[in-house]
Every structure is written in structure tokens, then in C-alpha cells.
View (tube, one colour):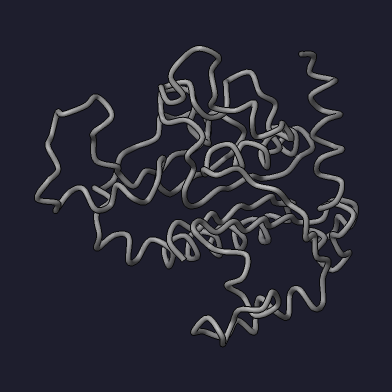
Length: 242
């Protein structure tokens, strides 16, 4: 597939977001390039927030999120897959989710699930347009060498490479080390473009309880640094366990 075709596909896919960007979000001194913040929450149901019938009825009011919906633009027909990876890949590339992770006449899960290296991602497109790109939180689009966020167009990353359910493994009585090649603990990782991401600490239950606060702190720090540099930004806080 040509780069030109992939670029056109991404531009069409992302048009809804760009059209809705207010001039108030524009980077300082550059109103033609609005700052873009895409927040994605894992394991968060459509009806959890007040604007869609939840909120107080679900046990917690969500006034801040409700105000964003009231003052902004709502897209109410985004169809997702049954698992994390295909939907995340669709957001990142504009491809149909069914084209990701599945293999004809082969196992559905192996090292190739997620985004392939040749994909032209949204982060790469915005990098080419002069944006600073940061992603903080759950990735789940490839966890082998050359397929982490900083290999796919992001300048910075802090978070976990896989699903949050592995947080229960480190202190589980039934976890058997070495029982399967994929049966390994998840680590919180950090990386920058052009560098190999580093494993920081085991992602266990205690870390799961604090990771979303850390994701927020990293996102705020990224915004503040890029605001001082007067550089337009594309930021993705990807919450692991809201």
C-alpha cells in the first residue's frame, strides 16, 4: 500500500476530530495547528457516565465529562471490537479493526498481533506535520522490539505494553512461571523516540492502583513542556484501569 494512500485514509478518518478542534485549543502563535488530546479509557462502559444515562445511577457523578459532552461534539456511533487491540489499532491507523491481529488459518495471538511496522500511524502523520507526540498509558499494539509506541511515531511513552489483567499474576498462588512463553509479568515501561524502551518495575496490584494518577501526571508535564516550547502537540492519555 502506498504512503499516499495510507495518508489519505488517515486524513479522512481523523477529519471528524480535526473539524471539531476549537481555535481556543490552538498552539500558541500557531492557530492553524490545534493541539490534539485524545483520551481513551480501558474497561469503561458506554453507560458509565452521566451524559449517557449513568453517573449517579452507576454510583458516581461525572460532571466534568458531562460538561465536555454538553459543550463539545458527540460522536455516538463508534463501533468497537470485542477486544482491546483491534479497536485501538483502528484509532491509530484508520484501518478496520478486523484487519488487525487475526490471521487466516493461523493462531489469533502471536508476536504479530497489533500494528505492523509498515503502518503509517496517526502519530507519524502528525510528526511529519511538526507536532510533538506523547502517549502515556496502556499500549497493547505490539510488545516486541521495533513495535512499541516510540517505534510507531511517538516521541515519548510511559505506561504498560499489554493488558492490565497481568497485574494479578505477581502475587497469585496459581501463577506458574514458565508454563507458557507468554506467561511473563508485565513491567511499567518508559521510552523516547530512537531509544529502546526500559522496563522500570513489575506491574502488580499495588501499581495498578496508582498507574492512572501517574498517567495523568506525565500527560500534564508533557503539555506544560510543549506549551513553553510553543510546539503543537498530539497527546494520548490511555487510562489502564479507570
